[in-house]
Image 1 (cartoon, rainbow, N blue to C red):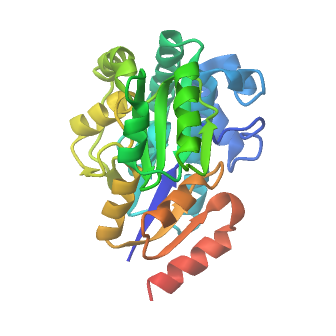
Image 2: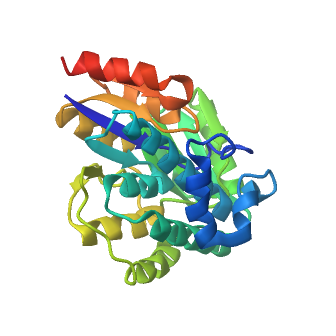
Length: 300
């Protein structure tokens, strides 16, 4: 039986999310070495209005909470992250140095926000299948962004066009159509150019062969080659998220304990929806002792 660590994407952030992370002083020493004075304001309400700060906070939190579990004997065999969550996943996998990740994520956030400073984003549609959503999108300049579950589809595009599709979805029987707390049109062709610029930055960074399986949230496949992981990280902003496929793949690889890193529990719910055959919990609502107990029970 294997253990999977999952790392959430944008939309889960909240003010003050870095105040109580494990081993905060040591983590912040690394962060401050890269980001300087910006470090102390990253998780403020004002800073979290910007994509750069949101993504940096999710990277830092993911690494901190995962390291704490590992220090207490709960270690992943597989790691996977949704969108920006792929970066802490790559750090925990041993493929990407944490300080390099901080530099790359800061650039990633800047490139995405500069490309679409306002008026764009993501909308989640719950209760309809992909073919139904695609029909409702016909004629609009919106894109499929995330295939999170069989009946949870995220679209990307301009706010007013997404709103029109969302209204059609509700009229067609969707249970929810929610504009997400993401201010850029992620995971579609609108971000091809920023992704290409980020890929250039990766050319100056050396990645390592991971020590544990790096499961791509964009392809649903495990990647071991550093160059392929770099490509996955650079371009995932412009590629459709295939989260359901990733969880099916983890299941097929005998993962039976999935632990979602803070903040939130979104991925835990999506993992269950993918037909998960074991235990799936979020660290935010469960103690280290719960994780240790589940691990022992599954490995007897």
